[in-house]
Length: 210
Image (cartoon, rainbow, N blue to C red; front, side, top):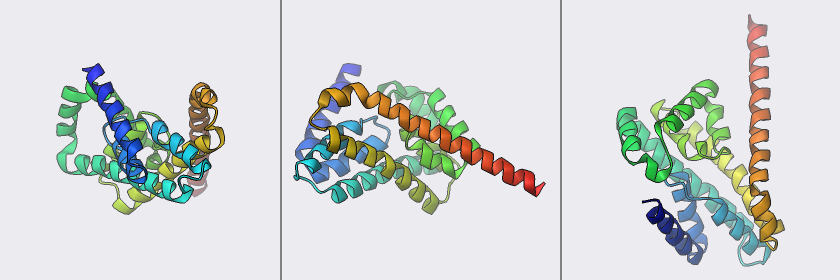
């Protein structure tokens, strides 16, 4: 089953690469929904093409964000209308195919409940959580405008990181391969610092009101 899944991902990636700009939109939509399609394999090569003058960075960025938002909306709408019980049943039955389990959903729920709207922004920067964070937003019936705004903000930041990684280091694939995890850890550190700062400021404001 896993081998079949990897073959599907490889086939999808080949199609995306052949479709150019449209491929970026479709690929990022898939990546942002239930299927854990790696955005690095889409946007880093796109950044290389930008450096070569074959693509425009503005168009790549807009399509990446739009695709991420469309994929996130798929999960949001599913959670909003199907409800948690049905989603849990689907994940329990098919989750292994997409590397998702009930523990992942519970973590996303707790993360969302703890930090509210901010979670939608920071969640887009965290592996695994990135695809799942739209679900608790849908369960909680988060305001659609806020959901779209924070999703686009987080997806935009992540997209820029990947596009410019390809732009500046695209000719050194070995460097990208060996340092991509390091880049992810730097992003996670940024998210952690951002959240801690936010919580401290929020607590200080609460204490002042008391």
